[in-house]
Image 1 (cartoon, chains in turn orange, cyan):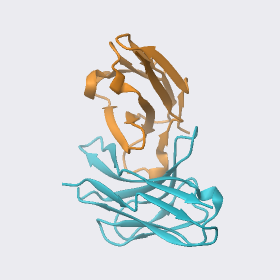
Image 2 (cartoon, chains in turn orange, blue; image 1 turned 180 degrees about the vertical axis):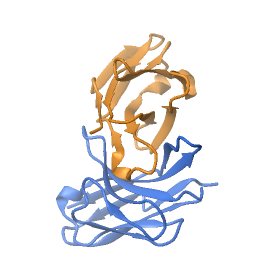
Image 3 (cartoon, helix red, strand yellow; image 1 turned 90 degrees about the vertical axis):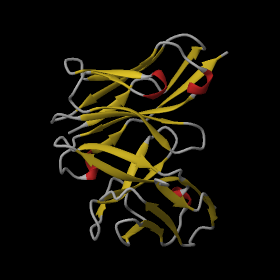
Image 4 (cartoon, chains in turn cyan, purple; image 1 turned 45 degrees about the horizontal axis):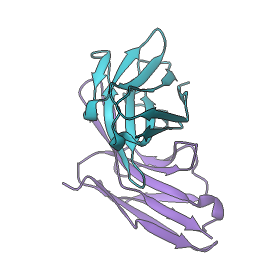
Length: 116
Length: 116
């Protein structure tokens, strides 16, 4: 069975410092992995996705994530936080193929706060 | 190209009232989804439609019904609203690309529903 765990419900960093949002997953198959961002009172926007090509994936707004199969992790990073990065971030795992939609699993989310 | 649109944006109901949430996408996607988002629980799948003419239950279907009216539209109905259905509801459609069939989902802006 697949699952996804976001290890921190809330992360707070100072503006200009690095961001690390942690995500671990389990999957019986070769998964696709995603990070979505949700700004307050907005819908979800795709940040980046991993689909078994390069293990280091670059996304929008300077974010990137590295797929580490041995650690079953897909952590999201950014070298320098900006105030506009304050939002909720969701890690998502999908087994792809013609599997049912119930095999798209969302993490519980990590709220990122940025201190001036 | 509007992407995924949802109406209404906000709704307040009394217990026992019924209503239909509307969703439409103009990206020619086959699959569409309804999620609910509650604090600390990420997104949970209510129903989905893998293609026009088919619908299936997700993780939390009780108290809801859906209709896939055509390829563009997928509606969610609450027949007798309960306070436990107070939530933010998101519609999504799914793109499948290439042999890997990557599962990128595109989300609407959400409907904030309060049941008194």
